[in-house]
Amino acid sequence: MLYLFCVAVGKLSREEFRRQKDLDAARKAGTAPAEVDEEGRAINPHIPQYIAKAPWYLDTGAPSLSHQRRPDYDDSASKLNEWYTRGQTAGPAATKYRKGACENCGAMTHKKKDCLERPRKKGAKFTGKDIRPDEIVQDISAGYDAKRDRWNGYDPAEYKKIYEEYAAVEQARQKVREEEIDNQTSTDLKAVRKVAKAGGGGGDPDFGSSDEEDADEDKYADAADAVGQKLDAKTRITVRNLRIREDTAKYLLNLDPESAYYDPKTRSMREAPVKDVPLEDAQFAGENFLRHSGEASGVQKLQLFAWQSNARGNDVHLNANPTQGEILHRQFVEKKEQLKETVKGSILEKYGGAEFLEKAPKELLQGQSEEYVEYSRTGQVIKGQERAKARSKYPEDVLVNNHTAVWGSYFLTETGQWGFACCHSTIHSSYCTGAAGIEAAKAASVQTLLQSANAAASSSDPTKSLVERHREKTKDDKKRKNAPLDDEAGDDKRRKQGTKLPGTDITEEELGLFFHCLSPAIAPLTGFLLHRGVQKAAAGRHRRPDGELQR
Image 1 (cartoon, rainbow, N blue to C red):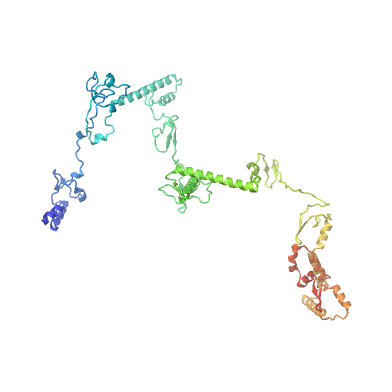
Image 2: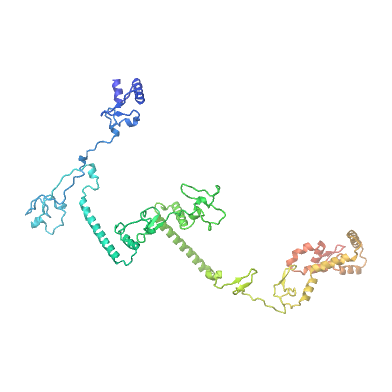
């Protein structure tokens, strides 16, 4: 029972498997005869097992390769040449209506609902006239190939009508071409041959044929349907859309290996091969430059709109339905422009200012004209009329009160005031004094006073050094402070005289009054120009030696 079970499932014992392996090795080595199939044909021992072994639904139990061979096909069973006979009848038509026949035409082979004739106003059942003969009903059982043959039942004789129609057209064309040749007054054989070729008679033996005599426009007529070519049938001129071979390839524009990368598979170079040349002037600016030109930016806007709409929950996909995406994007742009115009109109209606948004024509803004003006290297006009200078809306070059310069032509940096350059006067309604006014303004300036004071101090005793002068000044100050006030006359005299600046005849009270009258524009500069005691004098306050505060 165990052995039968093993045989049933196709398993071999260990000993049988070893003998089978040895037999296969001997057959491959050629020492043992090859295995033979049912028909007596040898089986190649080197064929793999997955090819030599038959599937379970084709397994016959014997070694064979019949499952790998094409089965013998019986052509008679397909019945490709058998079809229904058309238009044949089973004898003459009946003379009167028969029971069970078609109520419309009177034939016995079909019923009224299957009748192919035009429905009559009164059928043959009621009139008994024009009864059609019975058709021959054939029972053809078509095979597998006959059912799937698209030309099954086609009559090749029907194509004869199409052939005769084209032959008649060709004959008429030939006749017209002969008439054109007869009416041709030129004796040039080449012109006559062109007329014959235009009519389609290029192979006419009366005119001959030579490749050398053909025109250049007929050179590529045979390859008119090739990719990259466009042929006009009337002019017979070939237009090539391929790249001209004289053009420089992308990878030859810059031979530096560190330049832009060229992909040979897609023939694309994304970056510009030459970096020093502007992209607008370069012979080739790279594929990335072309992506931002033409309608590429519009496609990017459409894709961005589709992504944003999909993120908001709208079913918009540019690749799945591009027409819908284009229409929605157009509606979105129109609504956006309308909303912008509405907001703009409401703002202008509320606050006004529409007149400031109107722009002048571009021709007026750029100042273009057809007038020709030629300048020299130094900027002088050689030919033509110089352009007029623009004038302001304020009056210009207005001279008043005998002034030779306009107001604002002079600026006094010490006081921060504007004036006239002709007399250095800072009063707008003053009368011009000319050079005398300039000298007086210089003499009254603080800088002149300080320079004069320094000059007087330096000319007092040029033999003494600065150290000796400083010691004398210190002694005088101590004596003045320690001197008693015995009489009121001396006090009045000291109060009237005040404390003079060293080396000058100007007292601190006079200098303080002078700075007090200056413009507030230079008031911050007084802290850098004056001593602390001078600032107190400018404020109009000082203390007496006895401690009394006096103004």
